[in-house]
Structures are given as C-alpha cells and as structure tokens.
Image (tube, rainbow, N blue to C red):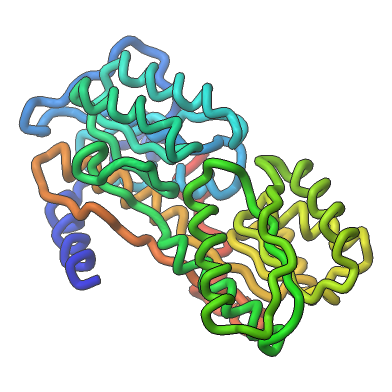
Length: 348
C-alpha cells in the first residue's frame, strides 16, 4: 500500500499540467476518432499521446463513470487525447476484439482495455504489444502476465470485495440460513473473483450458512438475469439470503424479489450500484452492496499508461478500492460521492 501511495504522489506531481480547452473556453471532451491514423508519440514519450479507452460497454452507468475518470486524466495531463469507444453490450466479445484491432491499425499511442473475456482478449492484447502499442488492463483481468503481456492492471480487488459481501450478508443473517449466489456471465474475470471471494469467506467463517445454489448464471443483460432469478426464487421458496456479483445480475434479482413479494424478506446483498439500489435500500429491500470507485479507475488507468509511455516505472497492480454501503452509512458524504460520482463535470 505504501508503494502505491508513493507512486501516486510522484505521478501526480510529475505529470500535473493544464487541461485542454475548447475554442469556446470550456473544457474539451473526448469522442470517437473520425480521422486517419493517430499521431504516434516520440520514442521517449515526449510527443502528443493518443490513448484509446475501451470499456466493456458504453451504455451502463458504471462505464460512464469510468469514462469521466479517463476524461479527467486527459484534462489534467498535457499533450494527451483520449478516445472512448467500446461495445454496446457486455457480451459482444467479437465487437470488442474488432475495436482493439482497429485502434492497433490506427496506430494509437496506447490502449486502456476492460476485457470482456479473460481468454478471448489476450491474443489481441499481445498483438498490440507486438505493434509497439502498450496496454493497461482495467477492471477485469486477463490470463496473461502484467509486465509482459500488458503494462499494469488497474482494478478493484474483486476477491476482497466478494469477501466483504459475504461478511455483510452473514451479519444481517445473524450467521445462519440458506443463501444462493446468482453468478454473472461466463468468462468475466472480475465477477468470477467476486463470486469466489464470497463463497470462500462463507465456507471459512460461517459454517451455519448453507449455500443452496452457486452455479447458475444470470447472463449479460438485466432481462436474462431477471428470468434466471425468477427461476431460482421459484426453486428455493424458503430462501434466507441472496448475493449477486454485479449491477445487471442484481437488478434482475431485485425485480424478481419485488414481483414475488419477497423483497425485504430475503436478505439481499449485491456488488455495484444503480439508483434503483439506493431506493431499494431506503425501502428496506436491499441490505448492503459493495461499491467500487469507477471514476478513479478510469483516471488511474489513463495516468498509469501515460506515465509508462513517458518512461516512468509503474506498479504492475493498482487497487482502486471498494466500500460496503449499508443503511447505516448510506447518507455519509463519502458514500454519497461514490454512489453519485460527479461525471457531469467531465462528460457533456
């Protein structure tokens, strides 16, 4: 932790600069590239840098916060332009691979990528490396090696976040009961780590909590998650608690609990946040959710890649942190900032 803090202090001091401004005097924003090949940096990284930032989806609120963080880094760093582009849906691996390949062909300076699949995206990341285009992985890991296949991994410690969710659910259950975990989507490393952390912590510390189901996937959309949640709730009518590892799976489960009349009766803990989750918590229908800091994730990912391009040594792994939101801390200022990040400061 001290190493990361020292690194961040040096990074902010060494790279701080004036943000770009639009001709009208306001801050410029980033958008899709509409021109030819991007300008490549000088060999020492001192020239202008064009950074492609590729999320898992451009539609969900989580990724809008990541986008805001990337723009924040751009505005605070001289000579940097970010380009934001990614799939519409979080199950379109082919589109994400095609987006990476297009940026390689354009000759961008570097790429920040949140891979949809920990195996399927590895080949194209290695392709970028062979083309001399460094990649920072964010949010969800690859089955590669940081420092070799990619520069750094900037993300929440998802395993630890899953453990936090387990401890919160155990707390509200009084350490006993029947629970189920509805998984997210096959191939998603970040949610798999949350799921494993959740299961491991329950098995280790809470022997009187029985996991009645942990092998069912909600899928990449709220609609598929809702259908699976309905099926699971019908299968387990005496359920005491539920955990879902991301916002889409949790939203589907929340709808299913509400429509079945079991919202609030079944203790519900999730990972990630939507405005509906805050409403549900205020109504006593959710009992905790683990939140990340997506704005900080986008910010640190871009700053880390720029530092690398300019010859600085960067950590192989940067933890962007997670926090458990409960009814007791819901209205604390720091929690409100995590729940409602100021993305309007950076996005049009």
